[in-house]
Structures are given as structure tokens and as C-alpha cells.
Length: 345
Image 1: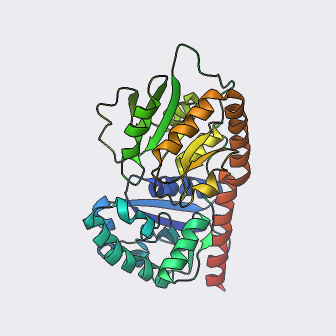
Image 2: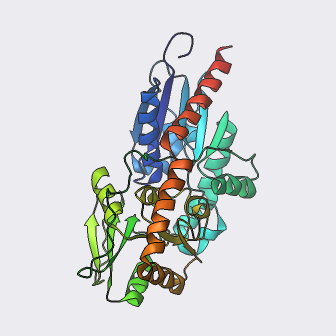
């Protein structure tokens, strides 16, 4: 409450079908539970490329604060309304260069760089969803380091099954991939990994929000399609290991959600993943693009049931301690209230 009334937060966003959209939905729901009038407003995907066209978008009446991502902040700054921008995925990281198209490179290095700088100048506060994202933003753009508020997940929803059964002799060792089927996510590494593993291993994959393609021709893989919240949880619980060969993540929702369900993760040692996955304790981290390392890690976990079960328990405990959703929401509530109170004095 601010001066006896509900705080009102506007959360405009361009629909991208990825983690940024998920974050916005989760945050808005959490803010509303804390008594804040949080209003989500989606805009068409193509407007992320021309955000200045959104400068005429009208905030809901009585808006105290706008919270959006760093690509769009320049478009949503309004007189008398505080602005918080959030760095989700820092695409200007040179580590992404080999995996993007020429057109993507031009867009990132020209327009996105401009968006990022403009949003920084317009924002009262910039937030990053991981230490990696904050450090990369500061190192590459030269702007002050954003405040870090780690993404949280609902550890009351994403929970282990009552009993995590070992693979039966009648079924293969089950791997799960969750995400858009893009090069950044490492989808091109899935076929060689599965080919090298051969019989006795299977891959289930759940396409992300903007994926329509499939892994055609891969015999030991099964497309689960686009899953709802409950179906994703069941897939995490059903898997023996989450396979996550991504090349760049701002946070890594899939890894954290799987670990909350007691499923170890085999992922890439890159960007934010070392913050999410404790190498050797909650999962295994492999060098970028190293198919052999992924295959070796998976085979080791398939052979060692006890180690896998220990990792699953440690993964659950680590996630509850470090990525609890209530903690994340609380930090945003305190940030929003402090900015609006300062504006009211």
C-alpha cells in the first residue's frame, strides 16, 4: 500500500515465446498475491524489432511503476512513472556469435545495443536475473552493473514424485530436453549425442512456446509437443536426467524446474548455468559443444543409480534454498515500493 491505496505496476512486453514471457506471467501473478495491482499487457512479437512504435501505448490509469525488459524500456518510459528494466538474455555476449545468423548479428550489434543503452538511460533501476547477466551487461556495455534478483520458480508446484523409480529393465534410460529447438539451445547437438549413446537411451523433448519443428529421423527420440504446466512437471518427474546443451542462458528455467522435481541436470558450463547447477552435486556441467563429454556424463549417471539419486535430492534442496519464488517476488515488491515511496515524497 502507498498512501492508503494499492500500488499499481504496469508490465508491458512483446511476446517472444521464451523465458522473458514466463517471467512476466510469474511476476505479475506473484505481485497480485502480495496486494499489488499488476497489469500485464502483451504486444505483438514483431514490435520487439521496432519498440519505438510502442511509445504511444497508454499505461493503465493510476500506474505508479512500469516494469519491462531492457529491449523495450526506451518505449515505455512515461513522465511521473518510475521505470524498472530487467536484463533476461544478454545477446551481445561474444560467446553467442558463432551460433547466430548474419541477420541476427546485425540486429543485435546495431539495434539491440541501442535498445540496451537507451533503456539504461531511461530506467530508475536495472535488474538482471543472474550474476552472469549483470556481469555481461556491465562488461560489454560499460553501464553500471544491474542489481541482481535471481529468478525464482514455484518449488511448491515443481516437486519430486512421491517415489522416484529407477529405470526398469523394460525401458531405456530416459533423457528430457525442454526448450525452443534453436541453435542457441544446442538442439543441433541432440542428434549426435543420442546417436553416440545408442540403444538403451531415449530422448523425450518438449518444444518451447515458439517452436514448430521436430527432430525428424532420430529413432530414439519422442516429440512431446507443446506442454502445459502440469504436463511439463510430469515430464520432469518422469525423466532420469535433463539434457540441456545450451550455448547461452540468462538464467535457465528448465534446469531449475527439473532440479526442483529431483531430476539431475547434464548441461553446458556456460553463462548462467554454473549459478544454477552445482557441478558434481546437482548435475554435471560439460564444455560447450563437447558431444563426448555429454555422452560420458550421461553414461556415468545411467550406470550409477546411487549417485543419480543423491544428485536428485541435492538438486531439490539447492533449488528450494536458492531459487524459491516467494523470495524473488519479495525482492521485487520491496524494490517497487521503495521507488514509488521515494517518488511520493
